[in-house]
Image (cartoon, rainbow, N blue to C red; front, side):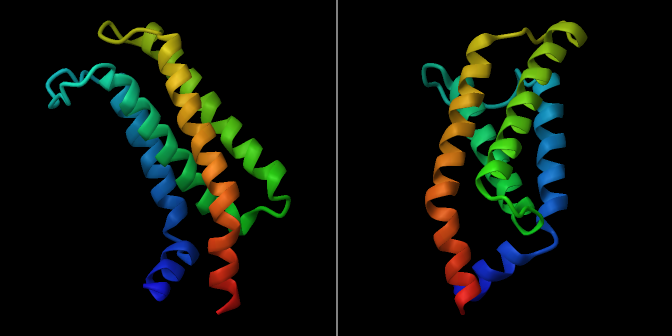
Length: 135
């Protein structure tokens, strides 16, 4: 398991995966997704936003870790970049589509996902990378 984790975290494939996830979230945010299965829970849309942006931010934090030297500052900038992406997508929904609308609560859900991702990465990221580098 340790070798698999090390391989995944050191893989040069993480950057293309991060780009792919960003493009997919952008596409799904602008497409008509009304035919997708529903969770049948209250505020499911907001849960999807939180989960998607948690995942997106986490992938970018891990993918860019080998390229950043400032740690805290770099992680904040990456997370702010993901937040900006989410806001731009919301604006595009209003301007470019007839089926999607700008929603402040979507931005709030995205922000909560990003903050949770950032905090988890700050707390667990150091330990994960230290364990991998020490072996």
